[in-house]
Image 1: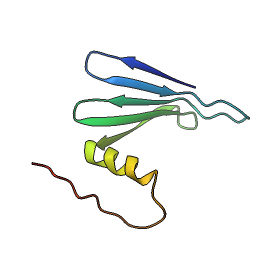
Image 2: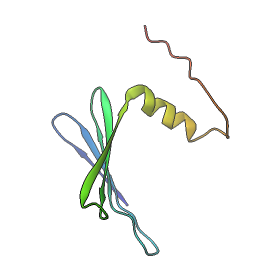
Image 3: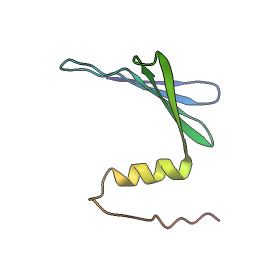
Amino acid sequence: MFSIEHEFDSTVVTLVDEGAQPLGEDIVINMFEDCVTVEQFDARTDTMQKITLSLHQVQDLAAALDLPEGVYMINRDDS
């Protein structure tokens, strides 16, 4: 299950784990104009863990989801 919310400066997608136990903590993805953050609560340390991805890293991740094992470089037209 997931939800999508539009905030003032970002779009927030929350992924909720469903199915067999044990369930993972929710994952919150904040999509800003210049970056994307991925957050998940870590019960072991009782802290929220955050990763920030540049937009190029997000594009690479999206491409990687559909490719076989290997090393790749995306040719970008940054002009």
